[in-house]
Image 1 (cartoon, helix red, strand yellow):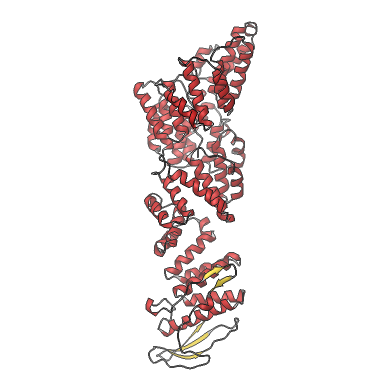
Image 2 (cartoon, helix red, strand yellow):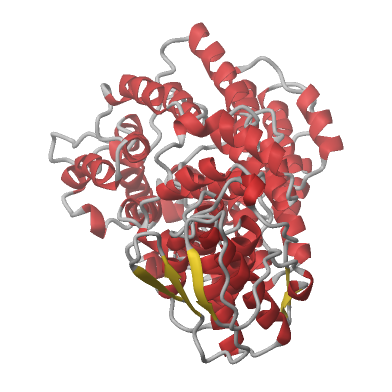
Length: 616
């Protein structure tokens, strides 16, 4: 997720055509110091602030209270355009203390700064001290401030009251669009901006706002088209260039995005990596795949919520679930993307620690996004609904949502992993095996969950030897023991008695319990029956030839119910020599032993007279 600047739009001196950034300024051609108006027309807020600070220190300003007050207000105005609302608030407070009768709008200006620094209760109290008139620009400004404060304080009753007081003025409509944007209603915000553009094409900066909405709606090509209308006029605007880079990141990769920022590097005269702009620092770290995330993101957590979210993602990519959980546990999501990240973290921690409460909270986060009107028909929205039902183990519903986006996600390894598990849970083993085989990520290949599910799919599709090879590739550990139990049970249930026998033999060696011995004995007889039926390769026979089996259940103590598995009904006794006239092979010797360290040996005399020995 990338941090994008989107102002609320309730400033006292509204200039929509004016710039979005201080760096759009052209360089003064004359060597003399320009006046304040020149800096403002060029949108050089840093230059204007420097001039105001210089004026404040002059003897003329110090001896003239009115000029001092005017200079303080200009300093606050420039600081607010630079995003430094703490300094703007300090300048306004200094002005109000120095004036016996400050301007009526001063309380509203102070409320704007308090709102910007997150002091919402103080901002509300300050705004209510403003002009008592219910008409005029100041009354509209007061209503806009209270409107946004109510949203931040989650007071829906007050929010509705102030919403009804909004007028059709450009300022009020911009405020409404900003509210829609902050609540994730990007299409509604776009409609408001387009309506204003139809009324006045000179409001060039609105193209950036529309482009930002399209970016949030995942229409990156359309966003670039809208953005270019502004960049044609102001090619070095940091806000517009940054948004263009974000679009290129989504469409291509981080390298393409970083290349777009070279325009800002050229205009500033310093490498982009040395920029002090927190937004550029943040996004550059994202473009570089999280390089330096532990240094860049933590200081920005209190500046922009995206830094916290991206730091969580950084930890999740490294399987550092507890670190991500500590960051997100007290975080209240405001945007759909925030709910998604929090849901993923809670689901990971819940599954890791088998915590049902965390999994329930994760399911609720996914449901909020998946059922939202703005996201229900998007790819992330349907993914969220799929994960919601996945946690509820309602795999038929999971399949419906995953199938609806499969054509767009066919090359995504994470999607194929979830799709494979879903298909396997529904018994669609061929489809599950295809999904698992399409995964290319080496990291996923190393996960035990992937190894176990793929082994189970291999067994159900007649490739039990692949499951056994997967077990042999693991080091001795509790996970390999669990996989061995699964192979023993599934192979026996599917009639792959040869590999069931191998698995039960190893299990009995590790834990010489009667249950494993019974399973091994049944699997051995089953393998012999297959051989007698002419299936020398121990491949699954037709369904009619399979012995009746009862699925095993795994418990904490290992395999349960093995003793109840019926063995094939064959008249074989220890040491006996039989002549089965209906078989193509005759048993020469057959030995049974209860000693786990002695291999089973069965020698066959084929019609050709050549003796074949099978070592089990």
